[in-house]
Length: 299
Image (tube, rainbow, N blue to C red; front, side, top):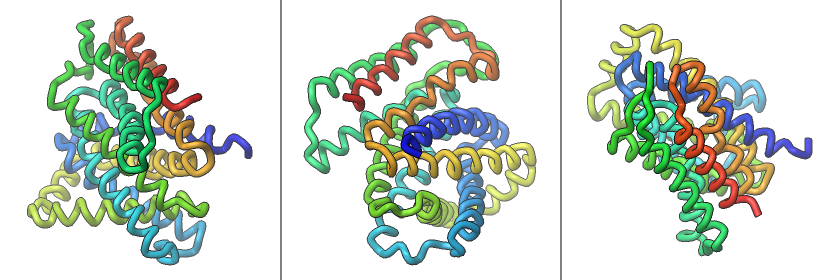
């Protein structure tokens, strides 16, 4: 299929938008973004191991080689363990719509990292794209319209968490690109990333002596348990695997744009599901931000 990369990118954005809703609800149910992230990654690893075994008859892709394992492991720790921890906290503090919008900053941070580490200079068009995206996000943050239901007022700490999540995702994407060289399977790549993320996250959990608390909290919240199992399938398995497929089968710039369209999908979700009243500033700010992303990456 000629447009498999572009289709995968669009589906990634849709899955990430739905995942944001499920994660927001699960995090508020369990009362801890940290516990939610620990459980979700374990579920995701189990799903991916099963999927990799069915597709490639291997529990883990040991044939990938040391260099590929290194790049993808670093990608998993930074993008999934650290980055998603900040993202969960952002969802908890500022809501799914604004959290998802802040995550779209990953496209800008990705461009900056490419400039810093690979010497790719920014053109005037790219600078304009950055300015438009930042302007749109600031516009949404400063909106003073009325909100209902589960909508939250932006907080400085919540916004900071969203920005750090975007940096984590951008860095994870840069490292993943290195690990995917040679048409390596996105599913197997995701298994490696998830292994590293789960090991890193649960090592910290054990050192903090919070493993028992995590398990007990999930036992006491079966609804959150089910939501996290669903979120693991939607986000880390389907969403992340599709994003790797997009990066592998189309230009990085196009893939970055298409995998960053979750805020557009979030507008109707926020309106119909969360019952948020979206003022014209929220809509205009989101459109402006995404227009900046398009200008930044499309010639």
